[in-house]
Length: 248
Ligand code: SAM
Image (tube, rainbow, N blue to C red):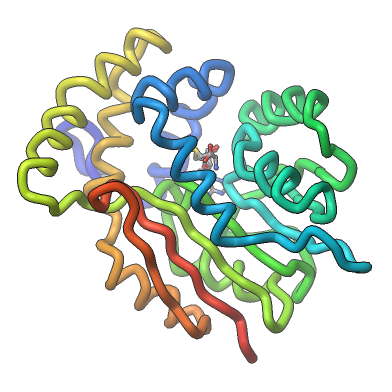
């Protein structure tokens, strides 16, 4: 992993990631809208539509939304399920969770939503607790992705589903150039404008470039024990939805 011109050891990566999100927590939504031109909303809608949480049933459909930040995915799951789901929003960053918990007070469905500070690499939850594990734009920030995937597998019930929404590398001719220009020349200055510091955003841009392409990432998911692994590209491959199941 690089940060600016410097090679960053794995052990330092989490600290840098945490700095970024502590700095932006209060303006995270504005940031997202600016940097994705509002597209993150469309992708998150598609992600939750694909999860299709049940709208009825006696047992709550319990989702762990990991790296859940300010609760965008949790809010969509609660609406899509008409309040039939319950969502544990978990994130390593207390500031992101604080903003999320504040926002959740205004949600139509808020019963059954809770917020837990945790590291995706080492979850404080018992085995086979959740029906689904979602992680949106979070997994590329986790230093040891394989550990996070194994933890996801552990906490899912048999028959449970893993869903990942993440940026991928744009490979549509023309769009890739636009995207590179945008990443290198617009994201860090926008970050600087909103938070006063452009460096952390340089790191984020690089974390997107370093993240494995969909097929190698699907293979990592299989190696963690998941089956029926599939993925769907969104908007010229800017982002990808991965889906997988814990069968055994
Ligand atoms: N899921 C939210 C969304 O889509 O709006 C937030 C995504 S935000 C780009 C990435 C989140 O990952 C941040 O809130 C950050 O604190 C969290 N994160 C980074 N490393 C993590 C880790 N090791 N365990 C849990 N969360 C982590």
